[in-house]
Length: 248
Image (cartoon, rainbow, N blue to C red; front, top):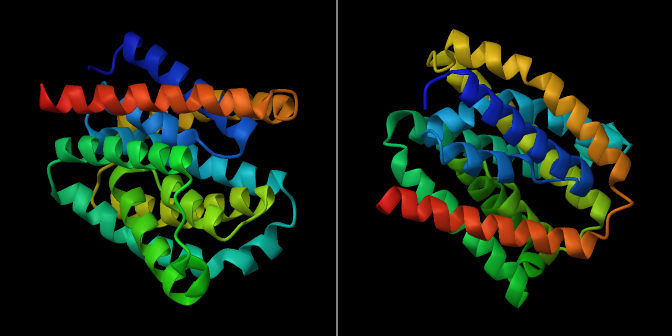
């Protein structure tokens, strides 16, 4: 799709909707925005458009939960390995064909939905905390670098460790923040940001901030169970669409 008025309208709608979800649930922006954008462009371009807005959203989400520096201190080991993994994943994305990564993104979404439905447990995460931290940090970073969907791996990790809602939000967003910073640096180093992508990304921050704060306002007014079910159905349809689009 060309960078015309239709694309800008679709991009704005996607970013607004994804930011609203992020504000309401505490996570979900890249999980929703990236696959939707990947349906109208390639994976690398989708990640580029979402990179800068994701950075801003991570900062807002972390600050909205309070105790910013305590959260950094608590989760920096996980975030450090996430940053290393993100650097690896981003390099692969830059040098490899990105069509395959639509399938990877779809499979990651489906795996997340499967985990949620059957409540699959991995007791070794609690039994071997240091090993699990390295494995989940690196794998979250690599998948995040390739598909921009780091949250799925981190959510599984948090669920296994019985993290509180606040810990889930802060840990995922701190890891995203560190991963996104290194990813943007690598993209800049490789001249991946064109002037058009950079201009549109920066301009879209207005839409993102407005939707994010609306989401934060309504966060406690929406029945979370119903909301999550709707999002899960929506994600399933996106994953199936990505697989169909790539294969056919």
